[in-house]
Image (cartoon, rainbow, N blue to C red; front, side):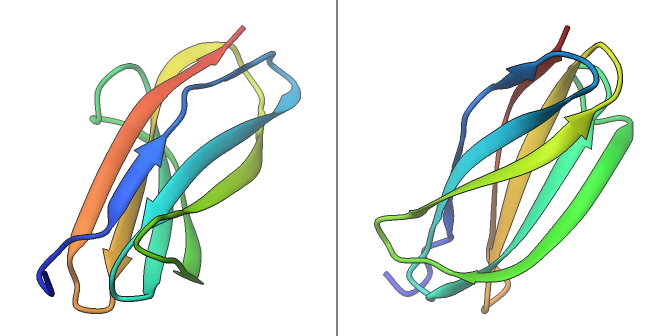
Length: 102
């Protein structure tokens, strides 16, 4: 339907402190273009924002488009990371997964 929100799927991210980690996710939507924002939260809750990065707008299909972004992990932590997608009508969807840095 024309009121469908975007779809978001994220994969767990893990790696070693001091290295570059890959954050993989898929975003889909009927509207064609969606805004993508990645947020990393401290700990397993959404109380403390450690990083918020706006990746701008991307063209996606209903079937979804895969993305992978790289971010350097400076310290050991067990955190939560999320992707929020917003379509041109302002409808949003968010998905989160674990971020483990050893």
